Amino acid sequence: MTTQHRIPVWVKALDPLSQFGLVHALRQQPEVALINDADLAALQQSPADQRTTPPVVALVAVDSLDAGAVQVLRGAIQRGCRRTVLIGSTIDDDALMTAVELGVSGVLRRTEATADRIVHLLQAAAAGDGSLPPDLLGRLLGQVSRMQRHVLAPRGLSHPGLSDRETQVLRLVADGKDTQEIARELSYSERTVKNVLHDVTSRLHLKNRSHAVAYALREGLI
Image 1 (cartoon, helix red, strand yellow):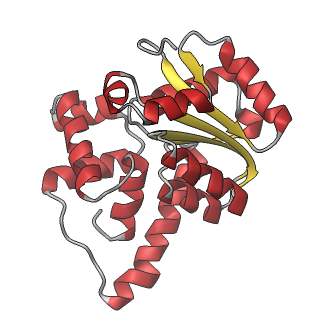
Image 2: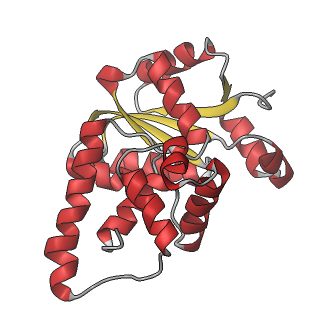
C-alpha cells in the first residue's frame, strides 16, 4: 500500500450501493489511496507507520445520523481513523451537533457529493481543517450560541482557559476563514496559526477546529 503522497481513505457506507459507488469514484482520483479493513488494522498495530504516513481519513456515508451511523463514526475512530468526513442525506440541527461532537471534520449533503467535492473535503480533513456548507455552519453557530444564551449564561456557567491569541484565531475560524486568511489578518505565519489551533485542540481534548469552535461558543469563550 503506497500512501506516502496520497491521502489514505477508509470508506464505509451503510448500504452496498453507496459503498460501491464511493469506492468506484475515489479509485479514479490520484489524490486518494483507498485502504481496506486489513490495511487499517495493520496501521493500527504499527505506531511507526502511523507516524510516517498521512492521517487516515474515514469517509462515512449515511442516510441520517441515527444510532447506527453514530456507531460507525465511533468505530472509525476506534479503528485508528484520525479524521472523518460525513456524507448524509438528512442533516438536521441535532445531527449536525452530534457530528461535530464526534469529531467529524467535513460534512457534505449526498445531493452535492460529486467526486471533486469529496476529494476537496478529504484534503481539508487530512490537513486538519474543517469544512461545512455555509448554511450548515450558520446553523451550527446559531445552535451553540443559543445554548450559551439560554442554558449556560443563566446559570453563570463559563470555562476560562483561552489566551487572547487563541480567542482571536477561533473567532476567525468561526467566521469561516481558512488558515491563510487568518494568518494574513492577524499578521501571523500560517505555521503559527496551525500551532495555536493544535495547542487548543490538544489542551482541551478536542478533535479538530470545528469541534474547537463549537466548544468555545458553547462555553462562551468567543
